[in-house]
Length: 228
Length: 401
Image (cartoon, rainbow over all chains, first blue to last red):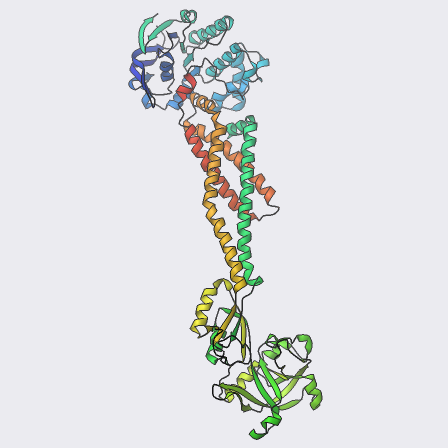
């Protein structure tokens, strides 16, 4: 798409899980690209390798073969901790907020890791929370005191805090009702189109996928088709 | 560090358990080290509390006074670094003025004893002696002075400061003639003091006249007669070196007493009263050895406690660890945060333990305890954290909920 930056290039990657008792090839020879300013959805049945693919894009592990280029740099050769800290953010189905941190502190956490000024980090966290639609009342609450939709909004605010150009979401609406699902999808879309992030959502919800700019369909670890 | 402190505050219950564990370990280790130190101190002070007393005796051990101790043995003992507080002396017979050899029976009526210390005369105390000047100086003098029994002073109408011609004979012992006297010298001796002394606890004949040993030594040298002490007792300087002491005594020619040996006046055996000392020292050394042998076990136990406690307390924080990794924290950074948390908590427990135990323990024990507990516990904790560090972030965060 014009004006957008090709930020991730996936070159024929495969990934095999090796456990003590079995070996499973979760990803088989996938090749594709991801651009900023676009919202992608990866759909497929359970066990199709969607989440594994996402975690490889997040730099949690390296592919068994092939390579992933981030802004033309091989992920295998870059500092993946720095990559996760500065370039990519992740939103999970189960939110994965720190239960003993307040909502604000959860959003501040990536900035604290980046050693940003604590006062500025708090101000930015509060601004982000307001931008995702959380009220000030929620700021000092603990995640357990929020609804699922509010927790996911908090998780999105935390993902935005690191200012990375890539936002990965693993079933972000999986635990939400229809109302909250719409809010979260709208938020994701805003991040892609207004803040020019590459938003990649793994979902098996067709309604969510339909709102995306590009849909990637996976089956048995392979990328079957790309629908614009 | 900031994150670590925040985590400590947030995980209050787990933090408290860690502090309590370290406190209990510290208290237990204080007791362990305290007991070991106390036993060591008891062993060190044992020579003071249970001194080892030795006496030269005849070979059968039946006589410890009135014997003849070879001059070489006496000199060897006096030059030995292994003995202290030696008390020795020589018993002579004496009369007043000159008389012929044939008149000895009527004139040799006095028991004269030359000693280096008042303790050489059993039962005689400083309170029994009336003396001008320092009494200690008297026994270390080689001047011709003496202390005379009051009854003898009165009988002869002698006064303090008066000089008396003392006809001294020495005892000689041999297998043929047995014990017999030989004339030595007739020095003029000044009466320096008097004593009230009637009998001894040992039943031995009490001396009528006391001389300093230095005077006796000078007289024997003038007459070229070897001075053979009649008794010699002392304490072992360092009873913890008993074996080295006994080796040296053997090299001086002293033997162990033998109850079946023939009765004689030859002072060539050594009686060492060391049974109580050896028994107590062996008990204490055995206790210390047992304590020391447990040290390794205790260190491994502390390491094990550190490992198990950290593993159990951190088990529920695996997801937190994975999430920190997902946020971009390096593995070492995550481990460092958790390690710092544990270090702060361990030190808190240790310091509380120290403060509690310092009431009855010393600072040096506290320092050793701190090093061992902190080192052992944190080593165990490091092992536990290295295990947590191996978790697969990907599988933990992306697995199906």
